[in-house]
Structure formats: structure tokens, C-alpha cells
Image (tube, rainbow, N blue to C red; front, side, top):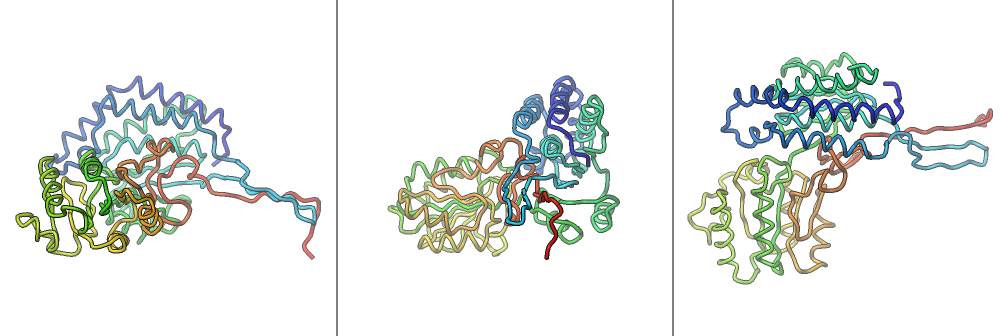
Length: 399
């Protein structure tokens, strides 16, 4: 795609904010068609699907944040002059064409597109069929904003494909793809990795852990656990597994209190055989696969561990590499946990719910990357560029 100057990109974003504001009722009405067809029993996905006035205002706010961020394209990362007179600059450059595959959340149609466009990338949006009416309405807004500023609508395009057509597109794309971001569960990620012919940046799977150390402030720990588990169950940064150091003072009563507090919030508490020695009436973990599972539901697993090393090993074996917290008064213990746990974000005495572009100061996010190549964590504007070497000479040849 042609490199656009910052001014024209920002004018498109300004237009888009105004268009969304004018078309709130139409967008919400389109979303209602999706909601009416959706099975509310899948509460997590239903919650992600909802678009109301507050959600549209949030979309406008996300665009405004990106509008006010510096253009990430063309920044000099490094430069040097060689003895032979060559001047070498390493500068940021767009990826080209990004494809994002996502389920349920219409706001991704805004956040992903605004980030990709400001970073001078074309974006192909493959939303789930459950949000088709919402996404069509939002795509129409984008196209209006592009046309108002003399640009073609192919910068931002919604793909209308079923599973088989998507699979074929990944295998034999009809246009050049530079990066694919699957934003969803393990099945979606595996599907994309199996069929894609270009780079895939993995996003999404949570299965996040909190470890309560024996020195932890117990009241603070309960507060953080409840927030991480119940604040938004549909989020990839929600809590799924709770590890309690068995050497914590008054361990049996603390386990019972944790169980009571979670249950009072409507959370189903599963226990392993060790935890069942105290919580005898709770449902037991019957299959190891549950430890790998991201619940996206009012459900969690509680288990004792004997040591910090035990907690670290458990987290590194089962977690999705997204977010993990230690509750501890001991800074050295917390530092070891944070160094040794292999996750995109590690926390000391804070909720995992902060693993979010807006909360971490990035602004809108394309996704939360759990990959180690290119970038881990929230994919914001600065992460949607690659690099390119500019070499300036005066007839030099290599001898």
C-alpha cells in the first residue's frame, strides 16, 4: 500500500469519530439483530458481542487515543556511518497487509482497523458470523470515512467467508498477506497455524494464575483474586487458577474463607486432591486437561503448593503464557517469581485484569500477544510496524 502522510491518516480518523457518533442508533440496531440470534447461554461470548451507547463511545475514545499518538512509521531506530562512507539507517516501516481473525467482539472491528491504518497497513477483518450485522455496519462507517478523504475502501475490508472458505484463503490467499493475528481460543489458533502461509502472531489464550505466597497480605489477596476472577469473565486476562502456599499461617481456615468468598460471588470452585483434604464438599478436578483450560466462566481451580518453585513450575507447565500474579510481602520472592514465570505479563500484588492496552498506556490494542517473536503483551500502534534498512552511498562497491 502507498505510504500516506500523517495528516491524511488523522483526517480519516477524525471523520470516523464523527461518523460513529452520528450513527450510534444504526450501529446499536444492527447489533441487536446479532444479539437476537445469539444463544445467551454462552455468557462470555454474549457479553463480548453487546454494543450499546457506552460501547460506541468507547470505540470513539479508542480512535481518539490513536489519533493523538505519534505516527509509528518512518522513525529512525538506529543510524551509523561506515568507514567506506555508506550511511545506514534502520527505520520503522509498515507490515503491509494484516489479517485478523476474531470472534464475537465488534469493537475489534474498530480497534484493529484504527491501529493498522494509522501504522499504514491494509487490514482484512474476519469476524465471527455471530457479529455479522454489527461488523457490516462498522465497515460501512470506515468506508465512508475513507471516501470522505479521497482514499479507497480496500484499506479496511471485512471478509465474508465460512470456515472452509477461510481455510482455502489461508492456504492460497488471493492477495499478499504479511501477518495474520488469530484472536481467540486454542482451536482458532491451531486452525490458523495449520493453514497459514505467512507469519502468524499468536494472541489470546489466557488461563491465568495467581500464587498466594506464605507472606501475603491475606485481605489484599482476597480483594485481588475476586477482581481478577469476577470483574470480566469474558476477558483473556481473567483469572482461572489459584495456588496457595500450604505453609501460610492458618492455612485450613484461609482455604475455607477463600472458598466461601468465591462461592458467594457465584464462582464454582474446583479442587485437586490436596485441596479436597480441606474443602471436602467441592467438585474435584478429575482430568489433568482442566489445568490447561481457559474457562471464560465463573469457575476456577484452587490448589495448595509447597513452595515458590512448585508454584513457578506449575504455572510454566499449564498456563497460556498470558498473565500471572504473585501476592507476597517479600520483594525478593516476588522478584524471583516475576523473573522465572514465563508469561507476557507478570504482576506483584495486583490483578491480572490490567493486561490490556488501555490499562498499560498503549491505548487501543490489536490483541494481546503471547508469542516471543516480534513482541509479547498488548499489540499497540508501535508494535504494528516492522523495520527496513535505508543505505545511502556515493558509488561504493564491495571489494
